[in-house]
Length: 630
Image: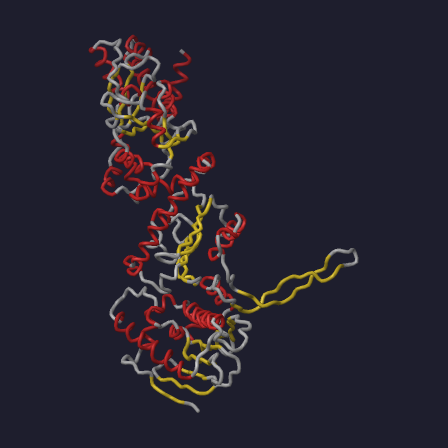
């Protein structure tokens, strides 16, 4: 006996609204319907475990199929099923009251990232792709008959008895003309792989061909034949649902390769397992990143009860950990979530804090248990640690005990160890500890060697975050300044108020300065004559620490420093008045010779900085040959 009716709803055009607002994400119809089938199956299993199910639970595989000719997609489960009355209640009343709320809330809004499941609209997402939906269901309860519900996307439905013997629900979608892209095996498989890969109930879709052994040939070698088998989409017990105690390193590495087939093996991982005050499971992997600092977003996958939600996890995972890979699963995050929901939800904030703490604890444990291995991984780990310290005060408090400095000799120090190692020799006249660093050990080798001649240590700061990190450390470390090794001449870079007597008179110093200014003839170069050790270079080119740092930060997008990037470079040219070359310049008879020698000394300094190029480099080579021939 068929019964027709009208769904009681104020808005006549509910389906066009659903379709319009959710169109950008219309493939999720399959996720929603498969999730419903999983829920129905899980409920059945719970009833069975409570002794409420009279029959044998049997095979609970969910089957997905499609018929290109008939233009249908079918989702069939052997779950709890529904009676006619339950269909009327859950499909016609509850879901549509959610639909009304949905329409009222979002009809005038453009930002429609909210998840439809939140409004009980999961089932009705079918109408994003279907012009007609049939639902045939038989309850697990004894003595009930099957029922069939049909709706064509208007507010009218028809319900009647159905000829269905086995328990469960079958949903048949009659695909609309503008959604025929979904009547394709690989399109459907792609959606199932994306959203349903780890659902807890087996999901079957189509067939796959496998090669199996089939006896031996005449030489005794195995023969093979092709066999068609059912294709199962999902792994029902993914790694993060298991206890860490039953897993080996190989299991974690194998799972990583499943998630990221093309990636190198990760450095290490953290298995999350929390049940209070919120539920959270997952595995986070530390990949090898070196200095390729492009925030590789969309690498962490967010699940809710093993259903994939999104790989946009910015508000769930602290930003500095967006470089991590892996999976997070929390039933406390609803299936469809808006950005505003994630930003304001207290559980999400707790999850964010917990992940930060777990990462800090793991790094501290690695450092404590095997420092040598930790140091070997530092080039990869360092970027996470520095990013974390820069962006999260709570992380800094923990990380300052396991953050490392690395010097140009490849030795590692904690902050405390480094202070103890250099404070005796690298404290200036104002009692400031001066940490020297290089951003390019090859380019700045001349300056590094000058520092080493003074028994100064030089740190390697060549990472993409280090221009910001250097500033940050100066704010955090007491009475400590960081200076790039080429920011000043070596006697001035750590000013201990030790004077070296000049061999030049004031008049000679002025004369030398004038000779160099004329020879260089460049307004971006400020010349000064200093009394340095005769062992130092005759000419040293430096850029002040302040100017260079501002320019470096502008390249990294340092907010108010952007204008510095457009300013012309300004260099200091320090002539060593005590060097024999200066004496030779002063003694030269001809003005041209004085200028030639000064230009040669200056070009040597430029060459040591990799700043000598083009015509200047060609002239330097010619001049060198000419001077050598004299």
